[in-house]
Amino acid sequence: MPRLNHRRAAIEETVRRHRKGDIVTLIPRTKPGEYSVELPAEFSVAELADYLSVYCANPLFRSARFEELEIDDDPYRRPVRPEDLSFLRYDRPFGRPDASQLSALIGHRMLLNIHDTAKPMFAEKMTPERWEEYRLFYGERNRVLGELVRPLLERHVFGFVHDTVAEQTADAPEPGTASLRGLLADLADRRSHAAEEVLDLVAGAGAVAEAAKMTAVQLLAGTINAPLRISPLMLTAATDGAGGAHAALTATHREPHRVDAVLGAVLDACGFGAQPHRYYQYYLPSTLAAMNYLNATARDHGRVFEFLGAMCVRTLDSLALIGGHGARLAELAASAASAGPADTAQTEAALAPAAPEAETAAAIEEITRTVLEPLAHRFGAPALAAFDRGAREYALLLDVHHDDLTVQLRFIDSSEAYRAKAERLQAAIDEHRIPVALDTFVESWEECSTTHVHDDDRLLVIESGEMEFWNCFSGTHKFRPGDKIFIPKHRLHGSVVLSGECVYHQPVIDADLDRRYG
Image 1 (cartoon, rainbow, N blue to C red):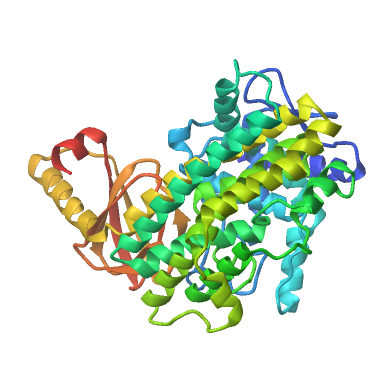
Image 2 (image 1 turned 135 degrees about the horizontal axis):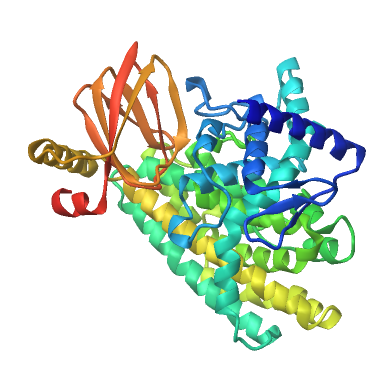
């Protein structure tokens, strides 16, 4: 306790000095995993962990209550689940297989909150309570602490992305306009196949409504964060000093496109409103990662060309998933809800048959003419190399997101199979007296578990009481004494206690136990 009190006193001094202008930012040390404040003090990663805890002590980031499964008209309330920081480490990057682990989920939640302090957001009703939250969110203390921890978080969550692309391109020739055009064509083809797989999963799901809405939540999150496509405005703003890429990212005056109308039809069919981050608890780690990559490159003037590369890939991804399959997604969501989309000329036009291949080819032509050729003419090889890096890094994050989303959709649709799997595993543990690591929880009525993931496979076994469990938006499962379910690692889920008290256990299932009895 004395050490923590000492560190918190030092943190307060750092915040005070930052306000005076004595401390500006964090810079990497030569030793991997450590960072220092530029002037005058130095901090180890262990010390920065204290800063993470103090940053998350903001009341806006506390864990969710039961009534906050949806955050109604409050863009400042962001349940991070800060209690998990006591055992999480951020001192080194993880590999791609762990891109949806708990530290990634919570790290990206913190990063989104940090980035969003640079974007104006308001509740529809700015009550006195909202004004107080507005002050807590945009206040200097929250912003200063966020900037102190941001480099540590970004190295942790994006390290594997930078390393993977650096290895891919280590011996590649210097990119030119033609090779970048070919890269975009290849990435567009990859996004098209990924979009088809997602829609096939949604269409074939037993829980179609839940699968459609969970997919739509991820689309909505990304749209709140950044435009669906690149525009000439972005290139001008990013390269001519008109506020930089960040100004382009938050620009509201954009030429309408068919994909905007299609996405609108999808959101209408799901019954989603436009409140910023109402469904924050249901963002997958990989959804947040794609959002934060655009945020990070948009705010850093030294990465403006990476931002443009990423936005071009986002354009092609939007055409593939929303432009190519959004109408089908809207139909699935509407039919599952026993209600068709609104009968308007705009919706009819949005849902009209599209020619995605022709649209994609036209988009690549436009990107070549309005982005690649101007960059090559004005900035030359360094800009094209950075564009290439941004496109590849963002494409890698989209591949990670595809894996994350499709596995989550299968988890959503496998409840009965995972209940049966849990019965087999628990029976084997009991019969053969197999020792397993075990966590036991005793929770009271309406105690809520903010959505989270585990970094190992687990069972959920109810000993007494009742619980409501969810692994997607709008889909819930009631558990009573004796009920069990298998929860795969890195799968988003949450719960709330429905009885006066609930006692439940979480046996950890290792690979050997799963292989033999699962």
